[in-house]
Length: 177
Length: 319
Image 1 (spheres, chains in turn yellow, brown):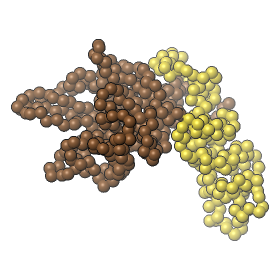
Image 2: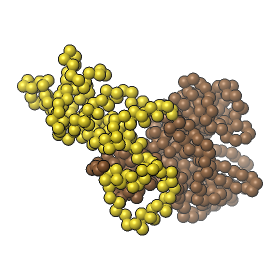
Image 3: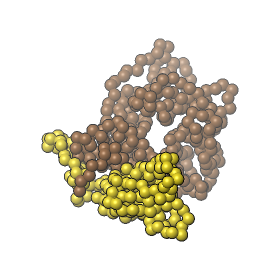
Image 4: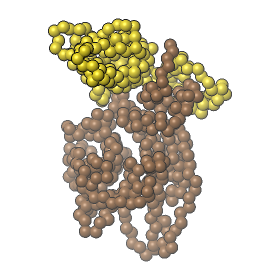
């Protein structure tokens, strides 16, 4: 994949598609990148069917649910996609993958990336960021997870105490929050 | 930090966690509890575990002679390092029970000579259930129970796990007739290698469908020769036949489930490339990228070894 997708390059011959984010930023991306987002692909194909001559390549596809900061990260992830697919087979590869998964922002950003990837119906991205978030919470405490996802614990204290006793082994070796 | 990730997105994240984390997060909220304990989630989580070798654990039957006792030890597979770690003590609810069979991370245990006490144990969540006692009725004309064998598998049609008990009875004047009743369970069927078809040159595969409770017979690539020792295993979710010759070990996979013609030889190990004098091996699993196979090597005497076999390079690596 070429690396010109984020900055429009007038000399490039490949077709470009313009995406408009919720904060009214315009992104001109290569068609191949935009087509990874099934929501965009669907919109683009519908447009083509309905109204070919009038707008042609100047179509602007609105993405009212995606912020520019998030879209920029998703596009930069798309450019690196080919390296991310193979299954890790040893410790070094797995560590590299973990590092790779960490470079797209803070754990809080991951939630936005997951929501956006889900809205855009971008399968590989969704799997990648889901795994990154899973890596992050794997050794976290119940309290951390509640705070992270904005969830209120609704078990009665004695009920919760019962689970913690029954599964005490699952609460051992948890990271500091 | 707040978010309103939809429930199915939460599920997609949680299936990527090991059992220990998921069990801990049962008490995050009532909503998470009902998600994590739903059969939909459990199935997705299991599927992900199988695909990625996550939480893969080797459960070993061990025996001590003085004092005589059975115990179970476990070796945890690290998908991070792609190898098995050291033997770990695991929480064992039923002392002196022995592993009969396993399926989907559940272990079927038995106790007593005739294996009348049966339990199903989930080592990862540390829970077990004992089965109600089911007495063995002797058919008339036969005098004694000689051997009883348990098979354990999943019945996908009724989405249930079933234990099949096979009992061998014998008559007093019968001379010894040895046959192997060890089975493997896969995709709702229990399989045995049998030398059943008269006049056939190859062994057959007897399948018992756990849903319809009916038998079927398939052909195999295994020649019907007395000197060969043959084993049936499951490897990478497929039926696997291992044939031990004097010189070679041939390993076949039934590439298409239930299709006789799909038996394919995946590798052949020349016995003299192995430094150790082993009696036989079984295939346990593929490495995460499918290039290596973990073999359980049974030497002529002494302890069982685990070794990785690199298929392309035709080389053994210590497990």
